[in-house]
Length: 470
Image (cartoon, rainbow, N blue to C red; front, side, top):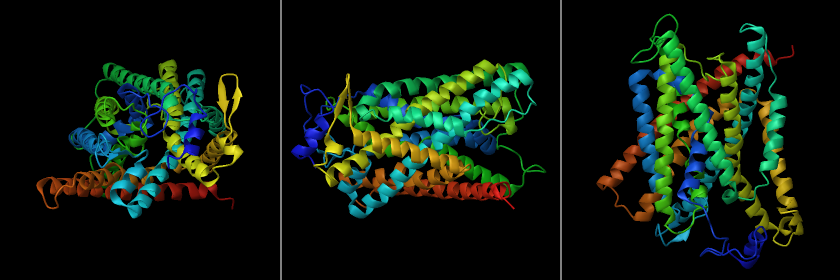
């Protein structure tokens, strides 16, 4: 894996006087600060703006407990996972460059293949979902200006496809960034943007509370009655659990982020610090957005109070929040796409090691261009954008995919790898605790998956008459 030809391919992208790490690859320069930016960019997605809806389904008690509990679980399993970056020793062992490599080293080929399907399935799915979400936010800016000009009841329909094309062009350009290490500035900007639109959302909620007072809320969420049956409430609670679980998911790129860190101090030590800061900051913002949004809107909280027009005024502030969301998702798309690019390019180098198309680089000013990278990454972005245009209800698919992959990627594999690497004795207290935790999270994934499936079926029923030509 680390032969001379592969090293020369990597080194062609850098200046010749740069030093190498102990594995023969270009010296990693990442710090816990850059890793924190990557983590926050990945965790804090547009789903944060739907947490007030989740609170409306769960109520104050279950809503607060769910957020805190998932934050603690993700921190715990992330700590287990970062110790598996090197194996068998977490400080001096052999590097596992990707999540899949770590699974292969600790759990064998069968689990390696299952992990690959789950990890890259969710990465591909999220890049498609981000394309859709970004276009919706871009369209929301145009609709907001239309509502401001013509009134809140005006017909301000805006198509999403032109904005998807714009997003795709931006991503094709950014996709030429060669690897994760060079992506740090993009992640820093994206992380700042995520804090900005969260802060704006919090500010708008506080403003609404001051202006109109606290809306009708409940300790247990939307009450069962004439507006919602007990069965409907149960399904929506399952869906809300899934939304919270997916909101905290970032394990599928954790080891890829860790692979950008310099080796001193030890990568696992730096990564634990970055993970703690990232999850703590995200949990605080999640709690504020969810709780204040629920207090402001009550049981009628919209799915997304920016694009769903929970707020109309001040229109310029709503526009700014949506713009920040767009910029954040532009960066987040790259964080999630880089592992896919790396997988495809590493496979191609091994398959055709002598191909000039793959190995040759051209210089344009101070920029090095590789034609294979340009073609491959541009094709990927184009295909994902086309899929986003074809499936108008793809976010429902993404909810199901996220619910199905939360347990294996965020809980099961980290626990099983840690048990294998540290040789924890079967039926010991630690082993039993970890297995019970894994079982509990599996149950949450199954319930969330059931809720997402029901929501998807409902969306398909709604879509069918709209899409028929008869």
